[in-house]
Image 1 (cartoon, rainbow, N blue to C red):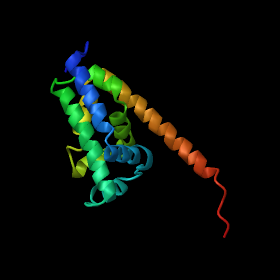
Image 2: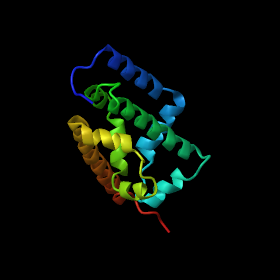
Image 3: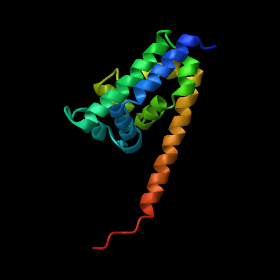
Length: 156
């Protein structure tokens, strides 16, 4: 994995990855995982992870395996790491959303999101993107908590 100038093959792969992300089911899956899926505990994560046959389980698997496949392309030298990281904040955001429960996830599934984690370990740009994503997640959670605190109380 060498940083540097991307070539036309890298551009073609990035554009193909973008095209795959625009498929309608993938868009729905990505919208759910980035916007609605905020597990606070590993147990909440595993409820979805183990609910085989459900839409949410399929969406989780679809999005995570998509980003793991893309990270594998980078790790194996098929795609410029700098270009990939520059164009794709989403895998780092999803990883950041799960970072507080990753040790528990890895206790049951040691390879979960490992290619993206490898990318973070091997690339300064990916590590920086991941750190920024963790701050973004933290800020979103604080804002969500603040909104919840200011909601009118239900009348009994």
